[in-house]
Image: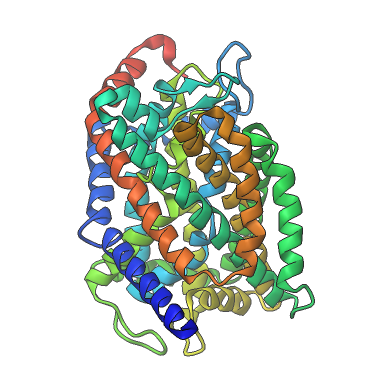
Length: 464
């Protein structure tokens, strides 16, 4: 009976994985997410690219806020809370997966995805601030469920409810248990079992609980400190490796651009990849990494202390740029300059990244990857707590906030100690399902975004 139950569970997990593969495949989310990004970019007349320098200025000024403006977090901390969830294991493992399956050319398509994703996230953040609400306890809530309800009208409330359900469920998987599991596995492996998984689970429970129970303001404060530090550590470490292998950097870029438009032949342990594979896995991993269009980030941006949806939109568009163009590129270039992407020793994406860093920086490389994975995964837990809490509040009212935080915190050690094949598959599926209601709303509300943006930049008093 037990074997039959296990077999049934495995069959269910495989079925969920298959459905998730269809949702994230080349006929559903990939064309939808990329298509919306293209529409937004052209509708905005390439403002996300033309105003990129301006956006960094807004980010710097956003560390402080006007006390007369409404919101909970400074614009900078709202962005960092969003990036806490976005900059995750996908920046390390996801990039390696794209290269292993799609070849070096996949990196080029990750970049293209991120550039158009900047337009999508600009729209998401703008709409989040425009249509946000204030709860009876003074919390500022927003995101797809609110711009669907308040922007599209009550007849679309069912779509908002669907998004909230998908987001609440996804938060426990992609934003919690899978992340704590990755932390426990990597710390245990690095310490040679000197720190077993149950010890890591207890430590995570204490640290995560101390932050998460404090709510969005404490999470925003921690994210505002943790995210810049962890990103700088990883970026500086990667740049040191690239500087040590400077002669190979042009070769790496050559591989990326060459195989972006032609198949990559099999060599060493690399099985080869067609042009279609390069595009598919580059786009898919890029979208999965920067989350543009999924509807998660606007829930963080809605908390910003600001009166200008456009200014927060400009911060939102920095998310894919920093996540994919900067952090993911560091990982990709280190993998390519190390030459390990063709190694026969590679038995998985995580192994490839660790092997590449350790080859280029013997001894220290593996520690840099592990520290990066741990910090990125922990920050993801923080950001997704905000997302799950906002979805839960939408469904059950603001009083559900604290119970959700408690349950979310208790799920952290469970994830660290569990076998999560089914959880991974469910998380992947519900994470993808979140995007569909959000993309529908973005398409219907894009005229609002285009009009507000034009009016803002046409007004001389709004020049930065």
